[in-house]
Amino acid sequence: MPFWRNYYHIVWATKNREPFITPTIEPRLFAYIVRKSAELGAYVYAIDGWTEHTHAVAAIPPHVAVSHWVKTIKGASSHDLNQQGLPSHFAWQRGYGVLTLGQR
Image (cartoon, rainbow, N blue to C red):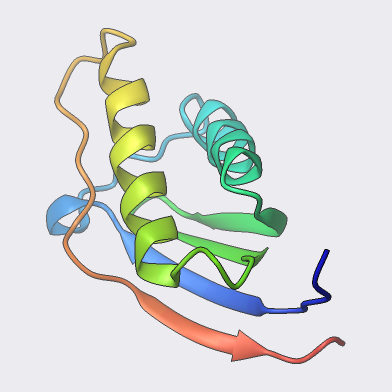
């Protein structure tokens, strides 16, 4: 097994920056993102945000492109939320921001 340490701070927003991430939705959304990340072999160290955006600090293995991780997380999480019978359609805005981090 290869040794790797790839840490990323990734930020993405709700469609049109709508304040959709309420205190009711947030725990389910964040837990889903952590579980889905694990399926990709990634580990989420921290996740938080505000009503219209999300920040995640994650270790993503080298065989998973950051763009693939983001696409998978955004697509799967919006699908999961929309299966819950929410009053309005949930969607993420296109794009994301990413920064690399050191070990500290």
